[in-house]
Amino acid sequence: MASSPWRSYCLSTAVSKPPGQDEDPEYPSVEGLADIVTLYEAEQCNWLPLFPPGTQPWLQTANPGVLQFKPKDFPKAFTDNLIPIEEYGVYVYPIIVFEHPTTRARVFYNSNQEEIASVPAPPDYDPLWYLLQAYGQEYLDQLPPGKRQELIQTFDPSRLWSLFKLIRPQDLATYIENKQIANLPGPGIEMTMGEGGESNLEFTAVNVTNGYLEFEISYPTNSLTSIDVFLCTNLIEGYWWVYTNFNAEYTNCIVWVDDQTSNILHRAYHCGDAVQDDDPGGGDGLVDSHELIIWGT
Image 1: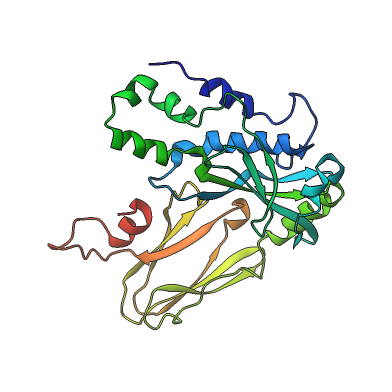
Image 2 (image 1 turned 90 degrees about the vertical axis):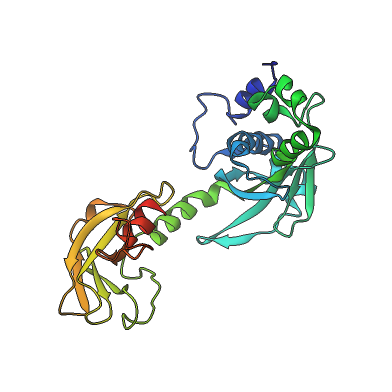
């Protein structure tokens, strides 16, 4: 396989600050446009392998996405055209960074998608860096022209648009504190309400009782014999399992207190018929709710 500059290029962009610098890694400090470009290029390394086929731009919130900045470290034309929004009680300044598909410069947009800055690409920059690393020059040269062009379009680094938010250092403590308060579980838990169980199996109420979550699960009378409640503690990974089960005969409502909720920081719930198997041909031996929620089939 032919050698490629991608590996060293990617490693050089993975660290935005010199090792050992004391700062919050979730809210790093940036001291100029070049620092933001470094973070954007690290985002390219992370996201390019996941690009779906196509040519459309792909907008993603960067990680880390909130960056501390001091306006004095940036060009006046950049800071003068930032547009503030209020978030968690302070002002932040959203920007979008992307690679221009023709010039390969790193372009900065404000939240109105107006260009407010641009940084030229390195003189030796090759937009095929990811393809060269993933496939090698020899493999690419052997592909039919149409297939090669399809790969070039799919893995074009300019497709990634990264959203960052800039925040002044003096506002960070308030931002973090208010964000933590807003994300605490409590009586104000938001949930989607439906038909009140008249025609669907669903959660129809949720309350906090003695520090635990109390659920009301409703369903049509005489429609079910058994209900499974599913739990997921990480929606990114999407792993669900059967958390508990209830006998649903002779009633149309169950009130349940989850006395384990204080031990689980993040949790999502789902409920389903624990018996129904309506696949064509008399069923396939797998309960429909398990297929849908656990297996995704």
